Length: 347
Ligand code: COA
Image 1 (cartoon, rainbow, N blue to C red):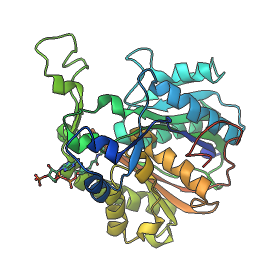
Image 2 (cartoon, rainbow, N blue to C red; image 1 turned 60 degrees about the horizontal axis):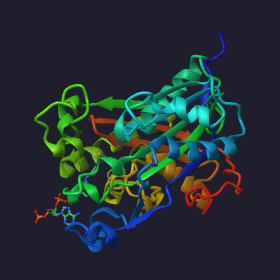
Image 3 (cartoon, rainbow, N blue to C red; image 1 turned 60 degrees about the vertical axis):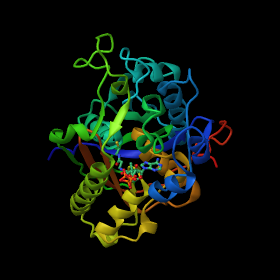
């Protein structure tokens, strides 16, 4: 009998947010909104914005450094999920690998918007299963504040910047931390629900005439809300079934955090207590590809995510795209506390 393909096992976690905190009142001082509206409609109280000059790779390096210190595993591959790369070329991962002393490692980016972390996990698991990689540093990082339209109060209040990372190593499917089967899906027919239209090959930045609004992110919030809850609940049922778990056996759900009400709606649709859903959206907002690992790192630090927990990991984003996987949480130590920051990994 041939040996089964290696499974991808979570061996470390880390996170980083840029130091600048932007409160709801800060936003209300420059656009027509209020702390009360943002808190009650989204669950967000504050978020972190990168200063001009700080790029996605800067955040990714910090999160990656912490995940590597947490795992203490030699990594041969670096993957970054982002839709806000430092520039069009080169992509982000080779820069991150070089700065972390991992020059020579395989390095590339994954682009799947707010689903980037789950899509990227699936890609990394595939690399490990195929024997191409023995251990992967996988980082979700976005500086989405750079895409926000200051005239669009609906989207401008929900996003923040950040990075979160995991180290995945080759192991076996029965051990704690092994990623289960993935459910991945898309619906390109609804691509117009979340867009940044300008700057790609269809609508080139250098071409005239150019609507300045097309430089920015735009979203149909209500439709995205409904799709997010529906798709993540469906993925949850599928991956729980593959794992052999009943929904009531699930201890924790860590889902993409676009809005606290979506997190709660997914819990409601699944019949899971809302308290089982991990969330730190109140202090970081929607951090796109970073949102899931940021919530994981925070929950590990607070003791909300513990060894043995049966965890569903769920994402939804523009594209439309969605996905999920299941993991029995492993025993992890957090990054070396002598590393400066992070509120997320070392509160
Ligand atoms: N401050 C104050 N009022 C606001 C506001 C803000 N920041 N944003 C919108 N409003 C107003 C609207 O103008 C509208 O006013 P009206 O009733 O007088 O027309 C009212 O609040 C309701 O707006 P609506 O867009 O229906 O709000 P909502 O409850 O749907 O919340 C979102 C908006 C964006 C927070 C919510 O739809 C959402 O989170 N969507 C999902 C986003 C998502 O999943 N993204 C995935 C990643 S891309």
